Length: 500
Image 1 (cartoon, rainbow, N blue to C red):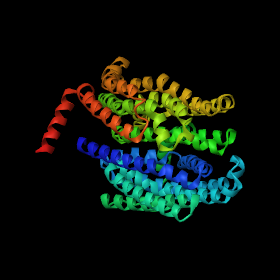
Image 2 (cartoon, rainbow, N blue to C red; image 1 turned 90 degrees about the vertical axis):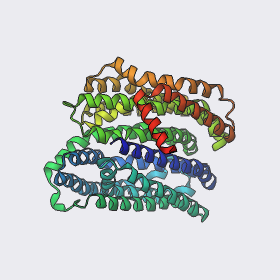
Image 3 (spheres, rainbow, N blue to C red; image 1 turned 90 degrees about the horizontal axis):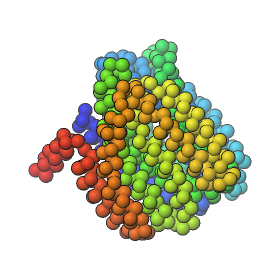
Image 4 (cartoon, rainbow, N blue to C red; image 1 turned 30 degrees about the horizontal axis):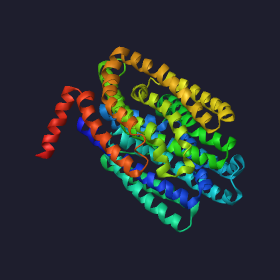
């Protein structure tokens, strides 16, 4: 399992960095090709797609949990029942996505005051992206079974990396041909279709006995999926509200061009959030294999070690974005987007607190004890919308950022740590000693250096040079202060084998 964990984590990071680099360099190119208003429309399309994705009602989470469970217990028939029932149910739900897509496409221009010259392109790109999401519902069942159910993120990521490169080339080709916003939609549709078909074929090769015969669909299995996925759906919905509603609020109250500025800050926090997600998403299928009533010692170990690993990754990166983010935005996009720095710093406050408890959330989801977490998250999402609407009228863009940060911070500090620790019958002091303090000590020297060099990173060269220095110092600090003795021994052994 440890070797597969390393392969999964390594491939997650490889795909993340490749995708982030592609997106990083494509973003200013896309803005230059489309203009600020069109890019604002594209940001809104991304928000639409985030909300359309909720209509799978958490089926993907159920696929991961039950496929992982039945693979461990050696019950292929039950596994096939889960996959087949999920596949056909998701196929029916995709009809809702098509209907919602048509409605949004024909009304988006009026809702967000999109310029008349962009109205036609907006309809087309929304339809293309909506179709890709609808197709992803049933086909995504195979992807979830492959990555989470069988714990083969390495294979899943091989496809993702190839598709990212393909979409980058296709995007540039279509924009150079003058396709505009529809070109971006075509790139999304083709890339996602190829990726889902490829992953489906991989799953069938790994599971020769896999079947999605309609005869496997039955109501008891659907009810089992529904009992688990309903609260997963609530969690997904609350997350969409927290991270995708801001663009709508900015578009309605501030204008389409302000969406582009706000979207740059959101994109940088999204880069960071996705990087942390490459770590946290590995834990849900692992946790799903354990019984929360009889395997508490194993769950404690996973929670403490996972939280420590998560904090070791998130703390220095969050500090880099907080102190260097303004310089990064100016050299990346230009001075016209400099106000995004303040928005970024406000958003990072809530995200940093959320990162400290990310593994706790995965533990609750993995063992199916996330009901209360889902309800509280939904309340937090509603508060997010209300606060953002109130504050955008008083403070503008920064008010929307605070509307997101305040409820996210409260749930991260006031609920999640206590819920997870209570579930595993741990102690808060033990969590602090085993997870938080090693990460804090490891981050201390790098964070001080990041702060001291915030005025020396006003160019790409400065960012690269100082980023490399911080990275080297942090590796040494994390090795000495963030890892246990036996973990350092394993790394030494691995390095010796590599060099030999």
